[in-house]
Amino acid sequence: MELVQAVIAIFAERSAFFLQLMIEHLWISGAAIGIAIVLGGAAGVLIHCYERAAAPTLGTVNFLYTIPSISMLGFLIPFFGIGNRSAIIALTIYALLPMVRATHTGLAQIPPSLVEAAGSLGGSSFHVLMRVQIPLAMPVIMSGIRNMATMTIALAGIASFIGAGGLGVAIYRGITTNNPALTIAGSLLIAVLALVVDGALGWVEHAMKEWAQARVCGRKCSAYAAAAAVLLIAVSSVTYGFFGKADVVHIATKPMTEQLIIGEMLKLVIEHDTGLEARITAGVGGGTSNIHPGMESGAFDIYPEYTGTGWNMVLKEESKYSEDMFPKLAEEYERRFDMHWVGMYGFNDTFGIAVRREIAEQYDLHTYSDLRRVAPQLVFGAEYDFFERADGYLALCKAYGLDFARTVDLDIGLKYQALANKQIDVMIVFTTDGQLAAADARVLTDDEGFFPSYRCGNVVRGEVLERHPELGTALERLTDSISDEEMAAMNYAVETEGREPRAVAEEFLRAKGLLQ
Image (cartoon, rainbow, N blue to C red):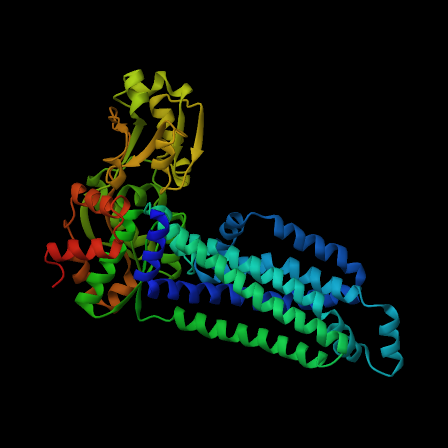
């Protein structure tokens, strides 16, 4: 009951936020639906006319449909970047199968005698197709469109994983900040949108069945559907161009609570000190792996990064990073990417290893080296990228001679819950984690100094700093403004006390005198 009240309260308090996400969600899914109607419909007609092409075409579309959505998004990013463009392309690919299949099936079910009779009246093949076949097949085609539209709206929630908009933002933000009410609210709205669209298209489908039976308005309905699809694509293209324009500072953040808070700080300080508009793409899945390419392409202008991550993941250096290497780090960023580190916050969010307290007490675990003797009996959990980092799981195991029973990939917002539920025994933590203080866990000592330093600062594109030199001045004001303890306290306020990242960020900036 308490959770239901929390969901109702969050709808009331953040109605404007959810309205914006709903508009973004409808635009992304609507653009994909419109493109799929045109391309899928055309493909269905072609394979009906050239039946030998039907099997390979449907086989190819079926194959694309079986590719997991995360894999599809990851495949598209190198070619189209992150954001709405890749999301729309991925959704369109998944929407093609029901559209192609419905069009082909609808046309194939028309009795050949009707087609022959229409042709015998002197009509051309195109005339017969448009005036007879498509109107008669339209009920089946509409059924395909209905299924495809519902599926696309539901699937569009995953678009936020690569920095696109939509209601998935609320879902992932709720998971990241341990706010189940926000996650449920986003999920409910997606379900409602899908049901509303399904109901509306169901009514259209029923109407078209009546029209097809009466053989009235068939050509008009086809023309209206095509015009609507073309209009939808045109509006989407114009909208995409509008949102892609900048003199706006585009901020990206990783899917971590402290990054959501820092993103809000950046927006507040930039708009307060410079008068520029700042827009946040929050919680980009994959973190640095997807944000840095977005910086290179110009999709993003600024994002909070960690020195050790920049050294190993971006510069691809194999040596362990320490802060005396920062001049070299900054120099290489400028030389290779024309990007600058501006505004080093002061806190060091490095990695740590936490063990469930009962396990730590049972085996008397205090250091990483202590883990060596019991690791084969324990389950290790970490975020996806930790298993792929040069300074991540494999390097850690090699350095300390660890061999865990098994590993579990976890979203950053779920790992403390997994530890509490005894689904994992050992996990990677960040030293500024807000939930760490409340967790029933013991943080072990890195007795051989394996993990490097991870001081947080802003990476900014040089082109943006040249165009807006006042931006650099504003960011420098954030230098040494946050301690480890202060960042942990802000994370705790969001993750445990349920406060909004923007409210926490604004309160902190005002207390520091960085906002008037």
